[in-house]
Length: 237
Ligand code: SAM
View (cartoon, rainbow, N blue to C red):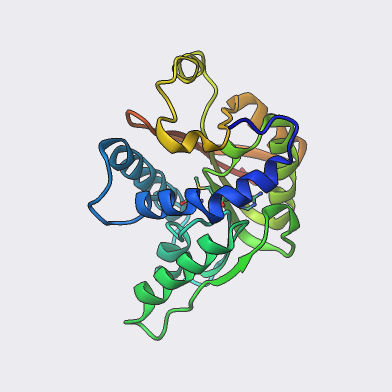
């Protein structure tokens, strides 16, 4: 259904508390009852998480560093960060997602009492405050058009001290074409609109906030594609 004219954020929140929660919890899980499209997306997304972790590792250990995982979903990034000894704050606009992330985190961390459980919160990223060594926001911008994304990026940048990690579906002629002919976003994910973002638009928003891209990566499978940017404050690159 189109959300034209409606409150986009409310539609996204509602979706990720209901049908979207059921769908994505399965994709971001390990159960075998997924179809081939969902399996492809699961594998692609796992690569984005892996690439994020190896980007972070380039700067050394993350033990003791503070992280904000904005739009944490079921905790796919927040949990491995906590397992590596980071202090993690993880939030999502969907309270169902946050509850599932917390459940998975407790399970994943239970064998090591020395590890710190992430602090979870159900709130949209626009309302986050505080300062974190690193702010990460993976695969969230896809739900928002570029004019909204600019403000979200600016806000995320204001929360970060040293590092900002953002992934998004890149707007290239090729992906725009696939999207138009319906090759991308198959199945019920169409319940919300999906927005591609031009890399230069995302970089311009980062630059306007005083950040510069230091590393970039890309993951593309058949149905999943995500550009990964690591930005640092201008002058520290
Ligand atoms: N970042 C997670 C990951 O990579 O595993 C989840 C990605 S999932 C495609 C998008 C998530 O963004 C959903 O959990 C959704 O509820 C959340 N979300 C959407 N809009 C948001 C907003 N304005 N603030 C916070 N979270 C949001």
